[in-house]
Image (cartoon, rainbow, N blue to C red; front, side, top):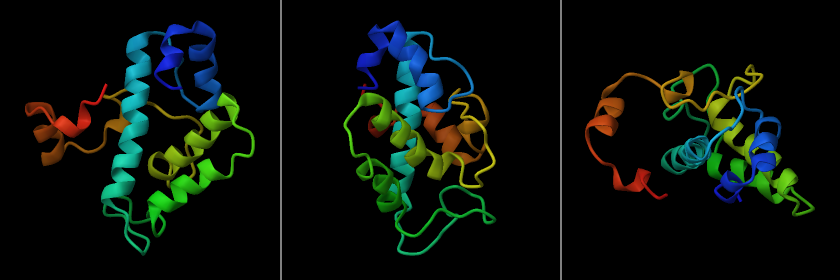
Length: 139
């Protein structure tokens, strides 16, 4: 659904409120950025899917990810009782929020790949920018 909304202005407009985004999703490029941002959360959950709370992936010892973060994220999706796109998108926002708002203090999400959600400026960021990472190029 996320990629198909690129073609429909009303769906892109709704994405901002449904996903609690700071900025509107205005272009097809914005939809791709959104898809990568959502995928990034689930990539991180998979890499840090430990049976105990951990800040290894999110880098915030004050607000670690829960034990089994992939299971916790997917629980948001399985709680949807009606398969309406709006309900699914809100559940997806809550799931991604486990990664991007572990502190619970953000009012909205900045999906700009060069903004605060981009993460640290450590070696992984350099490697990501200097090499084509096949697992990060699905679309």
